[in-house]
Amino acid sequence: MNPTTNAIRSGFARGWTEFKLSLQSPQDQGFYVFMSVLVLAYLWFNRNTEIEGTNLSYPTVVLPSMLGALLVFSLIIGPAYALAMEREDGTLLRAKAVPHGVVGHVTGHVVLNVLSILPSFLIILIPAALLFDGLMQNGAKGWTTVAWVTLLGLWATLPIGIIIGSLAPSVQKVGTWGMFPVLVLVGISGIFFPIQDLWGWVQTVAQIFPMYWVGLGMRSAFLPEAAAALEIGGSWRTLETVLVLSTWAVVGSLIAPVVVRRMARRQSGSQVEAAKEQAAQWIR
Image (cartoon, rainbow, N blue to C red; front, side, top):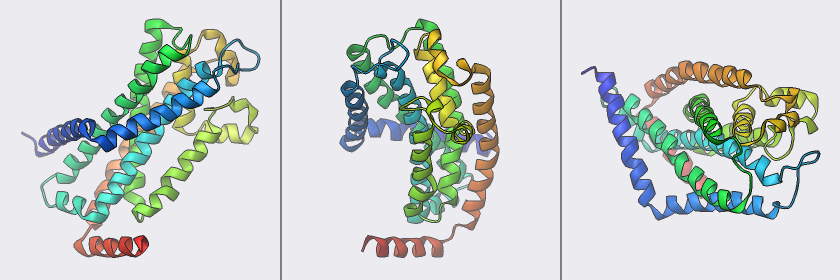
């Protein structure tokens, strides 16, 4: 068997095993429930609010956007922190010692982070369907849209997290390099209010990045066709959604392996020790 193929298969097995272990971990279970309860509580307290100019409730419009934001946030920040941490504690250095070990290790992270989205989605969607009326008004067509938007969103955002985790100088810097920019994008991407309320140049910036398009795609899945009037151009812009997310996916998939290989080549025992000493000083 091709060594690279074997490493990828090992990575898939490792990611699946770690996902099953996370489902048994009280800490991970608590995280899934905590984040989901926060989302549901926010929507519940705004359940009687209607979107201006429509008969749509606030939860009906905002929930799809929040699912998109959760997907993007998790698949950028999760891999970024994990790779930066494992670079510093020597895990990646040990993986490097095995033929094609870095390939298998990164594959395991990809599988784990993709699967980890499922519990959060289910814990949010099942209670939301009971608490709020009119969440999914497009039936099977809507769920099909959820599926392809999720898959394209995964492919578009995971490489970004891997690149950030490979380039960030330290674990502490991941917040500056990754979390802060993602939170800014949450604020300007029409997640909590219509993007048209923002300045024109801010709308342009938001439309460059995947978060806006994942949120738009999710809204097109959940909301009736008439709700497209709330969007830029008065339509769901499905073709543009596919093109933008596909572009991010292809470009990220080309760049991420190069960045990871470069990071792995430069990794050494002395760098790991220096990172550990710096982390110890930061803790003090």
